[in-house]
Image (cartoon, rainbow, N blue to C red):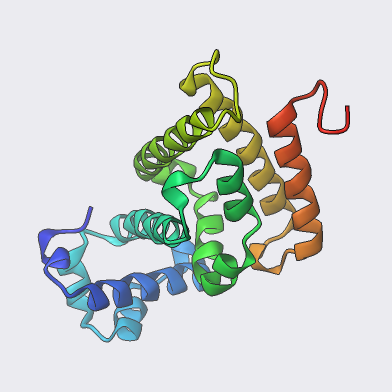
Amino acid sequence: MPKETFFRLRDEKQEGIMRSAIREFVEHGFERAKICDIAKNAHVATGSIYQYFADKSELFMYCAQWGFDVFMKKIDLRPDVTNMDIFEYYDERLANSEILSDERELVLFMQELTRHPDMMRPSFVEMYKKSEEHILQLIQNSKDKGLIRNDISNDVLMEYFVAVTERFKMRWMAKYEDLTQMPQDELREYVEEMLELLKHGLKGGANV
């Protein structure tokens, strides 16, 4: 986590530093990224970065948490998200080109994170905790609407939904180095098939 001095900065200044760091990591990778260039592009002194973060690794890890929070806030600003069922949520989240286009550098940075699993494990634990809380609420919303089975625990249902959607994301990340360049027609068709599987399982379906 950043030092307290970082959180004393105005929100706009914090964002400027984060986006400068993310751009540097995307363009050069973690190993070749330079703190002095991050500082220069954020319009702060190089020494100031070390007043906010212990080292480059800490800055990199916080970029992951900050980026995750940005995505979650953008998703949560969509209409009626608190009342969404889980199928509506995944339909919005997985096939929404607007967020991907608006946050291209952030998407590329999240892909860069997969190259540093050991370094990112602590941050991923916190991110997954937040994500799981969100998904559990969506599952309960879906149960309340009568869309999914009540005889299966929310925890088990969450594992099912996460497993399918994570595999979906891994496939597309392997296929496209830049997720913002995915062909939208192909993506939409794939999302619809995945949601059909989530709704009806391997046996039966809408047309049976």
